Length: 119
Image (cartoon, rainbow, N blue to C red; front, side):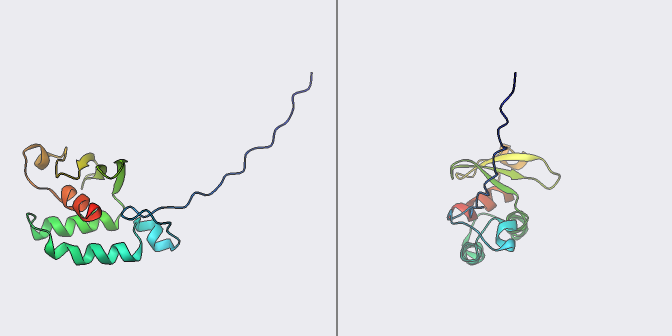
């Protein structure tokens, strides 16, 4: 009995998409960050207008975005975010987060980062 040999499927490279606008990213820096240059510029301009967060929280939110610590979980409504110690939290666009501060109803840098991406 002979077994037919089937060739292995050729992997197709799927383009990395911008977290904010959904466009395909081509620059290695944009792919690493997960944001295109226009969206990065928009986020940098939006940071000073974001209210309800301390300066340290906004700096941490920008660092979280630069390190690629956001992953969309349910469309653009719920995001997986990474904490300082590597823990994963679920953060909603409404500001709800599963981190310690979020459980007590306080604003956290995870929510600030999600607000910046979803804005």
